[in-house]
Length: 424
Image 1: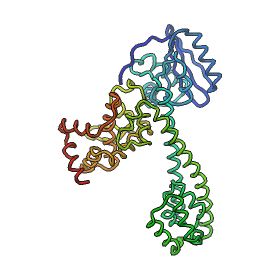
Image 2 (image 1 turned 90 degrees about the vertical axis):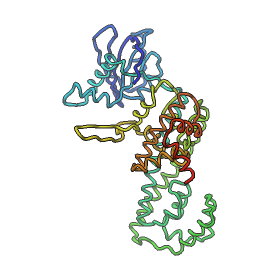
Image 3 (image 1 turned 30 degrees about the vertical axis):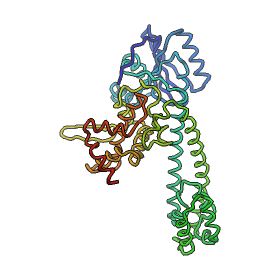
Image 4 (image 1 turned 90 degrees about the horizontal axis):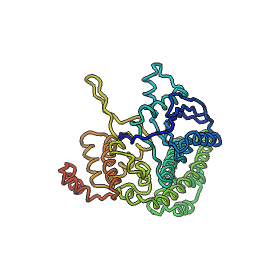
């Protein structure tokens, strides 16, 4: 990690935050005495505390070490310029705690002391956090919230699938994709086989056409299947309770789909205004979903990461090698920001169908015996280096330019690309 430049501070603070109460350890730069106290998580309390610090250390900067990079406390403190924030990785703090506490027990007041020690004694190994501009931070939060909604949507559709398999499996084919309004409308109108079989074919055909299903062969096949379909079960208890639960899930799923669509529109509008819009849109497979997520992964501050390796390690994409005696075990990193890792991994998966070199590289890893997930993770590792280079140079990605660079370096992937393209 790149060391931060030495800076003189008027005071050093370690804060162990919590939902309701924060433990604070403060030391004046001209004293060895440590003051310990508590702060309630209330805006008026935090504001009074900030005002007191400004009066106590006028015109001086205050170093603050805390165990987070996102949350109510850091959002409150980042608005004051005299604070210099040093976020500490929770795992790093845990290891530091274990070094001095054999029992390994976690204690909030002690953690604030440890954070104070880290920022006073080991500040050169910490990096001050500089928040992105408001537009970048807004996009970052929105894409994270969108991912949470998508996870909820996935959970609901999985439950819906399980219920339909229990009493009405034909609906999985006739309703269409379950994460669509068409499926919601279908299941709300015809939650059982008996009800859909009582509906005239003209009405069913009109339903599909009105929901943009205009492939005649698909519609006619469904209309032929519906009258002759046999029920999986005739148990009234199973059908009645399943229908009630299906309707409950559909009532949750319908507004959720609308919320995701609204977020997509908001993200697209904000992303179009960002100066790095064209850069992140240039990566094959990024599209409307992953281009903003790549922006959120890198941010706008070009000095945040000293190398691509830092991002590879932070995201958990970089492999971890563990050795013990004659045993060597290589695995992916477990302790990492999950959303960040998902962003790179999912983008790499999308790029396979859009980028000839990515597709060739993925196929070469599979040919070497790697499973799908391992091959995609390896591809993501390579993509991070490419994106980092483009990001640093502020130059959009160009597939042809990169392939030419591979050929100049004599990369074996470059020799395989034409063969893979002919085969496809």
